[in-house]
Length: 213
Image 1 (cartoon, rainbow, N blue to C red):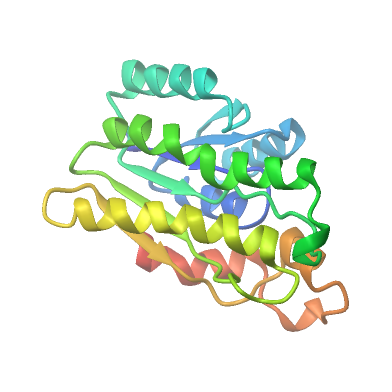
Image 2 (cartoon, one colour):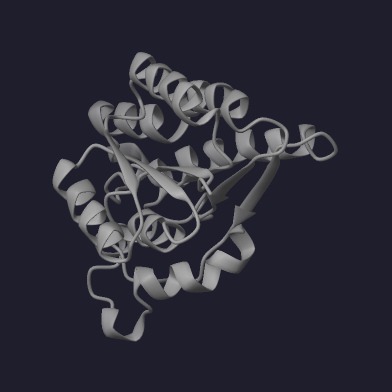
């Protein structure tokens, strides 16, 4: 029996990597990320547990590339059952009046602008029977989180609108808020934190998986 397809954006490390590995038991994973090495490591881990993955080393901000990928998924698998979005740009912590144009543009492009093509493309791909999962990290209004917090909040506002619009028609849009876990993003935000006290991305994925499937 052919496994349903699961598209995971941001799959080369952290939570996206861990969820992709775990989901490979039940799904054919289509892993999207810019980091080729991370995707190759994921592919090795998935093969070691008897699963299969299709690697898509590309930038989610590239509209034409994502359109081509979605078309290829449709032609090959007839669509996808699941979309998990973990890709995020974690801009540096800085006072609001010290945000640089470069950091602002990159954060807006990745965290907000990309959603303007990802949601329309992937909504058509998963259809009304599919499911999309997003992860909130509410930092809006916190000191020094203006860059990350505002663009992440903008992303989630769009997702919540989509969820409200599809509540009775599908697809099933789920927004989860994970407990803190070890990640490169958290390490940049809290460099002095005792990471040994935090669960691994794999542990976080295991906790979240029942809410995803």
